[in-house]
Image 1 (cartoon, rainbow, N blue to C red):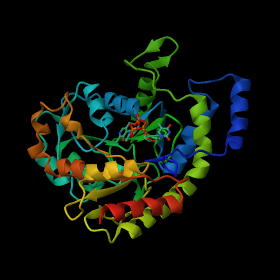
Image 2: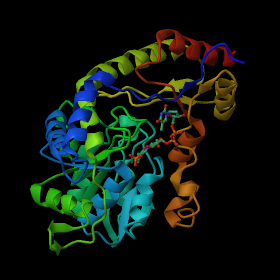
Image 3: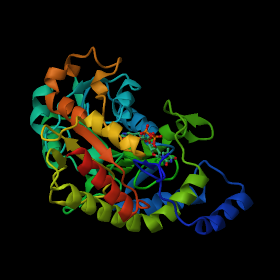
Image 4: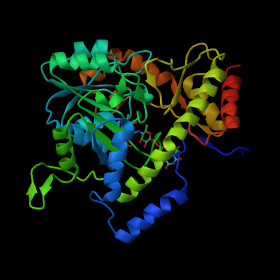
Amino acid sequence: MHKHSPIHVTQPSLPPLDDLLPALQQIWHSKILTNGGPFHDRFESALAEYLGVEHVSLFTNCTIGLIVALQALELQGEVITTPFSFVATAHSLLWNRLKPVFVDVDEHTLNLDPRQIESAIGPETVAIMPVHCYGQPCDVVAIGDIARRHGLKVIYDAAHAFGVRLSSGSLFDHGDMSVLSFHATKVFNTFEGGAVISADAHLKARVDRLRNFGFVDEGTIDLPGLNGKMSEFNAALGLQQLKVVGDAIARRAAIAAMYRDGLSGVLGVHCMPETAGHVPNHAYFPIRITQGFPLQRDQLHEWLQSHGIYARRYFHPLISSFRMYNGLESAHPDRLRVASRAAEQVICLPIYPALTNDEARRIISLIEQAGH
Ligand code: T4K
């Protein structure tokens, strides 16, 4: 038996329940539960303002948002993407009968390496789907430039990137679309939820119709839509979460600083480099376990678990190694050396607002002990 409670990689942050109750009373009273009700519309506008973008469409989750974003662009052919992500990224391509072409990631950011994107472009390539992995912004300028020169669409999987801001403006001004996740495990959650950000009003209108079965009006369907709508409950929660997410990110930043400081002297343990030019959201705290450390990453994972610390190996195994992808030429590990190494080295430490300083210190000291 541990004398401490188990610590998971994350714990959802929630607004005070009392603050949510008036909204729930309104929903119970009006009996408008979904299909674009008042809370939905208010949350959509509030989110657009918070994120500094114009065209937001709320979704039931990010995966459906990705599927719809691709569908809205009417793509056919190959899409360049990263193997170092959660499996939903590539699955959204298969659901659209698009062929993923995996390209290796950059050593420092673990995001798609723009230098390698260009050589993977072929006659069938129609788009690029990069991921702002762990909330670290992709090289949006280089990717935008490649896309423009080759006439490609760019759909960012921004599942991890809520609240990340570039010093040059909104991260979501880049690409044709960006798709966010509001899953329970994310920086900002509506239990389940997500949003698609479109570059223009025409695209948003298509996304909105696809999200609602393709309805134009009561008697007209013009697209093969699905049901991706966010309910009034989730939207009411989202409005309250917007009020507290700033504090949540600030607390995450403080924990991240403790980890960086505490782990700086541990041989073989590397925190991700801090890059300039953006305000981070500290969605995850990945560390890399390299040769100087006496334990392999998986041994450290087990050591932490044996002390009730449930860190996670995001993202292991690589997407490209799963059955439905590993036959692709681009999935061969020799072509994905940086991503393959990262998948063997990375472990994400617990980070969430309710994690106490004592708990963070205990995690640091367990890693130090394992390093001796
Ligand atoms: N693109 C990217 C790049 C993504 O990372 C994701 C999702 C998506 C797209 C798709 O977004 P959504 O369609 O989900 O909106 C989790 C999440 O399920 C998934 O949303 C997330 N990425 C992925 C990186 O992580 P698991 O299997 O690690 O989740 P789970 O249930 O093991 O939760 C981790 C820990 O969090 C638990 O040990 C305890 C804690 N937890 C979790 C939940 C669900 C709670 O304390 N309360 C909770 O309600 O996948």
